[in-house]
Length: 330
Image 1 (cartoon, rainbow, N blue to C red):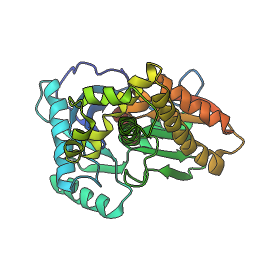
Image 2 (cartoon, helix red, strand yellow):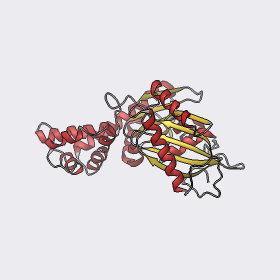
Image 3 (cartoon, rainbow, N blue to C red):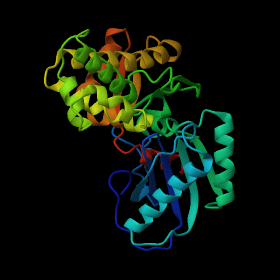
Image 4 (cartoon, rainbow, N blue to C red):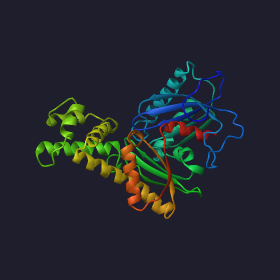
């Protein structure tokens, strides 16, 4: 098996490969190992298969590990917890590890990256350690020939590209205070604003008022703020599902918010396309809780991108981003 769902372990001798996807909402670990592949290392289009020679054995999860939201020690603790959970699912202790790759949200901040790398190195988990940002492996495994644009929309939002010449570029990823347009946090915050405007009578009536009341188990909007003040961005981003559900039921206000979010995400793609791929079809890798879980949102993003003049070659939805991290260890 290469890629796909985890398989059974024929032996427990290793050596194992570990991939980590450390995000703002959760951390995932994947255990894999190298296998013999023969000649079947290309796909139907003749492009190299990034998962050729890799067997995925198990996955495990833990809490948030964005390097700019938690300390380096806390981030590593979540990574270690996810690794242990993955081995536990195989009924094995943490075994011989040949190499580990960690794709971490917030890695773009040099001080945060250096602090995290120091913690990982002290842990001595493996002789070979790669630390990168959470979008790099998406291009490696999600686009033909390691060339295209990756768009992540979950708690935050971020786009990253790599050209055929190896030139890298990015757009977004500025954080929830003044960025992350189109993200779960942004959608939830916009939905809450629309709900309280409706409660005041200064905005259009919307089912969001009732829906957020159910979500918070508090029908009185004036009682929401004291509770929400204690929430972190990752918790608040969960409210995006409320807006998506209300939009799917035909609510005009919620529908406009989702369409605006899709356009913001399309602008991320268009900015990179203009700079690096203008005039050429571009291959896309789409992931993050919003884009994985909502096909309608994905289609809106693609439609807005095309309406703005972008050209899509092919696109792939990465349902298990953590698996792509292993491709960095081939």
